[in-house]
Amino acid sequence: MSLSLEQVHRVAQLARLEISDAEAETTRTQLNAIFTLIEAMQAVDTKGIEPMAHAQDLSQRLRPDEVTETDRRGAFQAVSPEVEAGLFLVPKVIE
Amino acid sequence: MIERSLKSLAAALAGKEISSVELTQTYLDRIARLNPDINAYITVAPEKSLAQAKAADARIAAGQTTALTGIPLAQKDIFCAQGWRTTCGSKMLDNFVSPYDATVIERLNTAGAVILGKTNMDEFAMGSSNETSYFGAVKNPWDRDRVSGGSSGGSAAAVAARLAPAATATDTGGSIRQPAALCGLTGLKPTYGVVSRYGMIAYASSLDQGGPMARSAEDCALLLDAMAGFDPRDSTSLERPADDYLRDLERPLAGLRIGLPKEFFGEGCDAAVMASIEAAIAEYRKLGAETVEVSLPNMKLSVPAYYVIAPAEASSNLSRYDGVRYGYRAPEYADLNDMYAKTRAQGFGDEVKRRILIGTYVLSHGYYDAYYLQAQRIRRLIADDFRTAFKQCDVIMGPTSPTTAFKLGEKIDDPVQMYLFDIFTLGVNLAGLPGMSVPCGLVDGLPVGLQLIGDYFSEARLLNVAHRYQQATDWHLRRPAGLD
Image 1 (cartoon, each protein chain N blue to C red):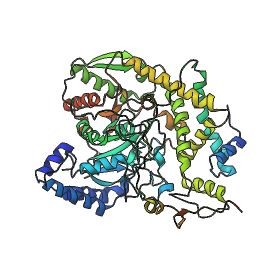
Image 2 (image 1 turned 90 degrees about the horizontal axis):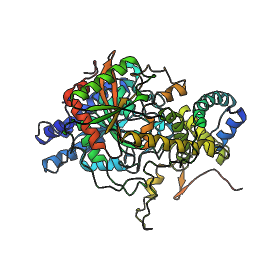
Image 3 (image 1 turned 60 degrees about the horizontal axis):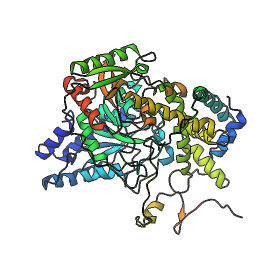
Image 4 (image 1 turned 120 degrees about the vertical axis):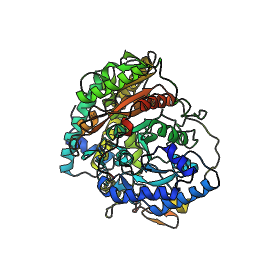
């Protein structure tokens, strides 16, 4: 398979990564080389093999629905680029 | 003092031969002198380290010590440490001062260890040479024109250059074992789920695992004892009784069955490296071990499977870097979407972007089955190969890496060549098994690593197998020249 320039732009848009036309071209070449490597997988017959998501095949542990964390909002917001009155600030999204 | 084992340092501290403040200062002085060239540390904060050392000295005076009290350790900059700048090797987190401790940090702090500094690494642990770090490449202390390996290159170079007695590291596809091999160290990647991932910045969550890197297996065992254990804050942490990783160190190796996978001994590995591996196996035979040929027929597929699964998980994990709650935000943007796109384009380096794009693509509509599910099925084939092999042997051995450390700049422009360098280490992560790298030779003055792979939860046995070898040989005691 081979990615088109348009596909590279589309994937970058999905990943929220700004990409220039020049970068997209280089990226396309590199991704295609990597996908050539990945293609080796397609020749393998995996019919009937259960996909393996986790090394121990464990299900997720459940825990009681209890409050265990203390309120550290101040400390966590101190590392934010922009906060005001306990709120994270982002550019205006609703006119 | 800087050549001593952790056990011997602990004895020196307990015997008041040296204080933790003096020991910590010795390393801080070496870091100030040698780190500008080696670039093993991203952040040092002497006043924080010395405050911890002072507290450790008080504990020692009060007789409340553990095996690590007062011992300074280098921490990979992937572990969040409260009040410490924690960058993960990225511009994205250049200004991030962690408001909390990773479980690994918390456990080592509780044991009384001292944080010497935060070590350099490939950006978000994505790399095999430490050249993707926003903070510059790490130089290999054995030859400063060569790479340290990655992603835990800073931890490896710090210990090899005697800028720390031991270090923490993480391994998603070989990032403990490979730099340990290239820098002449002993490193252990535990069974997935043994060391908590809480506060360890995520790359590929089903593969990421923290572990120790040190000069000897005994030092690794001491560190792992403190690092490992169930943690309810990590959803994939394993609920098992605490293990004693020192218990089997001295066990004789008579009757040990070593599996030699024919895929590790075919083409693709440097002849001189292979000669060192063969010599190590001969030494094991002298120690009473037997060898048996085994097969890992799907080993070659570990590269494609890994480069689907890891980027897929990475693209999801790294979506959190949006310039809103922490980390970098682009200075100028038109609207919210533009802020995300510019923040991420400016904050991430090339390799991280590449993996995010691969991951986004393989998870996108219409491609999920062909790539992601197929990779997960192959993952099971790879794990099953190991399961079959372990019916015939107790430990698998082979090279950690196909060559010794390569030159800085040699592979960085060719991602595929860089990826193929990890051919011998990736399968262990996909299967979730424990693995080690142990120094077993020098080729043209550069270290060679012997890889040991064990069955699930066989860390104590692996450490035993490595320790007995290190009692019979002295490769792990060799040190790079010109770093006094």
